[in-house]
Structure formats: C-alpha cells, structure tokens
Image (cartoon, rainbow, N blue to C red; front, side):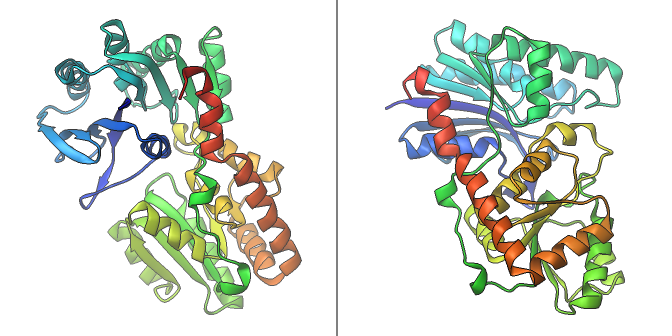
Length: 371
C-alpha cells in the first residue's frame, strides 16, 4: 500500500485538535487509500506531547521539555529520528511549515521519501519580535521553497512573495478550499434568515471582535432575534464582553467541534462573517478557510479586505467587503432583506467554490507524480 508522510504543528483547545488547511490534503490521500503517517508537534500549548500517528492511531508520544527556540531545534532532530526508525519509503512527504521541512531533504537523500513538498499555509516578515529569529525564519523559508519538489501556497500574496524569493522553484497556488461535495448545502428557504456564523480556531487577536459586536448591536435595533453562531474556542474575556453588551441571547458559542459537525453548523447559517485585524503580519499572507467554506456551503460572506481571499471573493461577487461595523451591518441587512441580491451572491459563491474544489485542484497538481 502507498504511504504518505505529513509533518506539522497542531493547535489544541481543551484536548481537541484544530484542523487546518493541510488537513484537506490529508483527507484527500486518505480517500485515495494511502497509509497516512503524521508527525505532529504542539504549536502553542506545550503541555501536549509530540506524536507519531499512523492511520489515525497514536503509535508513540515524545516529550520535549524545552521551550522555543531550543524546542524547535529538538523537533528537527526528532523528525529525522522518527523517519529513520520507520524505515519506510514514502511516496510523498509533506511539511506544513519551513521548520518541519528541514527533515525532508534528509528523507529524500536517504531514500525514505520519493518526493518532498512544502505546503506553505502562511508567511510573515515579522513572525517574531526577535529580529535574529526573523532573519533565520526567512533563510529557512527560502531553503524550503528552493529544495521542495513543489511548494504549494495558499494565497496570492504568498505566491508573489515566494516567486521573488526563489524564481527557479516550482511554486503552485493551492488555496484552503474544501472538497466541494463534502460540504452540505441547505436551501435558503429552509434556513433562519436572521442567522450568522463565524468559525474560528480561537477568538484571538487575529479577529477584530469589537467590530463584529458593534455590527450585531446595530442589527439588533432592526432585527431583535438576530443570531450569531461562533464555532471555535472563545476566551473568557470575550464571553464577558458578550454579556456586557447584552448580546447573550443573540450569540451562541458552540466551541471547538469535529470538522463534520463544524461544517454542519456553517451550512445552517444564512450569512458567513469575519473581520480580521491588520495588526498581525502573517494574517495578510494567509488564506481564509472560513470564507471558502462559507462559499462551498452556499453562504454569502461579509468581511474585511485584508486577506487575498476576500479580494478573490469580491472578484467572484460571492460576498461583500466592508470597511467598518456600520457597513458590515448594512450589507448583512441587505442580504437578509433582498432575496434577489442574496440568491445572486449565493449562486456566485457556489460557482466560485466549485471551481476551486480541492479534489480537482489536487488531481491536477499531482498528475505528474502518478497520484
């Protein structure tokens, strides 16, 4: 049986792993009957161990007591050690960031992997507060892009940057789009018109929640039963803010859910929303999974203009870009009260999502590798 290796960092919330853009690729290989090997390291909460997972089962756990940056160095050596001990020849090996990619040239050179890939989920010129670490990160990133058999990037911002960084490298656009057929679609007539949804790994500094709160307060003056469902981890200070603003009955917090349940909650809503902050550099270079999942479920999106995903959405007329909370409330209201605008935007969203179906994109990308 064919084998594929993934090396990645994983975020955890209350014992539940957050799935990201590379998980779409993992699911694709699983559906094609590959044996899935995953070397997984915790990203932020270091109370979790590093793990070797084979076909969904944890085979071994590894404790690393150090904190970054020493921890990251130890992860590189651990990745190589695990690859050597597995004694497999993987048909494909993926890393979801340049740090984890450092083990893959070793794997290819020693015939543990036929082809090695970097799936670049984001990028940042100012990832760390330490300028030395930023310099090292840039060097590692360039090394990964240069040495990968192919680098897939999730946003046009990263595509342009990576091509400048390594002009001779093979770099392809692979957005965080889901498999179109896997996302449930519910007809608008079967939905609550006054329902909104936002999906988040965690309600963090990446999201300008104050603007969303303000927009909800404006909407509540017109629609008393307006309802926002939050799928993801919400910190206590956000919960307190919701109570303080008298929005407790208008906001439902579902917490972290397994992917199928999370996307089920998305499909029930009428409009998808998000408002990123411009304060964090790497947000600009990322690709908004939530906007693409909203579109695949047939939801128009109302959002900011920070990510290239939002600009792409605007080009396809699959949603609306807004500059402030007042505009957000106005666009949401327009979608809820004007069926013609809603249906046109919904159809455009579905067409956009269908065009970027992850299955089609992956088949096209890997046809040269006999996948």
